[in-house]
Amino acid sequence: MSQEPNVAPYDSEPEDHSFTRRGFVKVALGGVCAAYGVAVAYPVYRYLNSPVEKAAAASKVREVKLPDADQLPKGSALMFKFGTAPALLIHHEDDTWVSMSAVCTHLGCTVEFQPAQSRIFCACHGGEYDARTGAVTGGPPPKALEVYTVTPMEGGMTITRS
Ligand code: FES
Image (tube, rainbow, N blue to C red; front, side):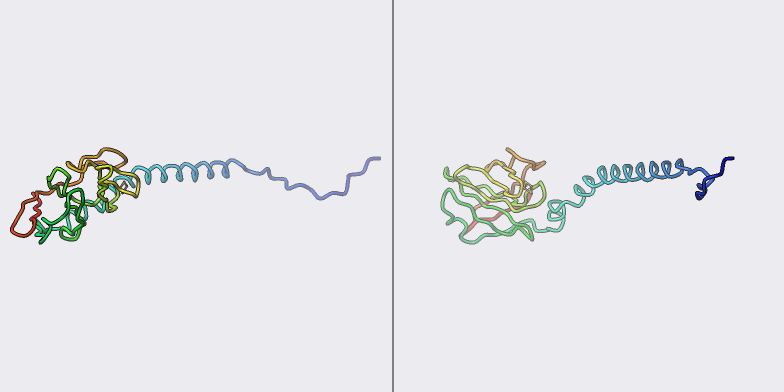
């Protein structure tokens, strides 16, 4: 004569794993789609909301007078404000004058003139610009610095945005 073992019965209903897996796949796909959307939208947002574009839009100033700027030694630069944005006036060794925006076109850091390398440099991410034309010569900046017109005046220089 056999006896039934005295154990608690299993839950008679089988576990349904399909809903859990399906739910997980839905959540995972939703997360991937959301991450993809952010990856596409963020660069567009950054471009439209760039500090360079905002600085240019905020500054309505067309002309700046710099008294005594004609005394600037050759091979050096003067940093000044063009409206609300920093700008550079460079007196090159060959006695030519150049002025341009000092706002890096990458993410808006302030650039500096490096006479030893004859370049304009952005220390934030290593952006480099030509010290005469403002053209990008290295690094991540997407476009050249805005160049201004330099006009000598009595006792100084006038810088004009065209
Ligand atoms: S902000 Fe100038 S290189 Fe990035």
